[in-house]
Length: 164
Image: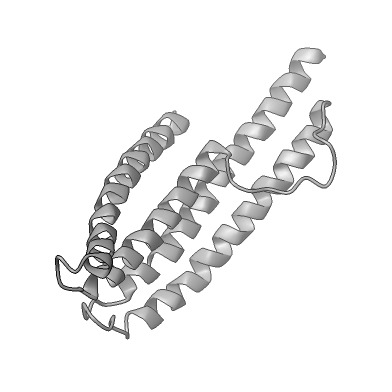
């Protein structure tokens, strides 16, 4: 049941990512046109806006990658074929993501408070706008990876109970 809601949530994030990528194209196009053609004046705020959008795209994309299981992980052994070694391999990855998520969530709060005391140079926007993406992403990494870990354990336990 929870998995269905989390899947819908990540579908919404994918739609948001598409909208943000389209929005990112506007200030980047303005930068390119202004720098190489001179048809429009150079606006420095476009670079800041593009940076803000890019930071959020990366962090939201990382949340979706954790849900989809397309995040980067390193396997130091071959992929296990038997259930118990497979449980350990997948479990270690999920636990590592949960640890990093907790780290980003905990220290990201302080990072956001630090950003809240600063303003961007051109737009004078509060930098907490981008800094808050760190604890938000960390919290969702922890939540989604924890859910995937529980799925991995349940899959192993169901396989074990069906074999006995």
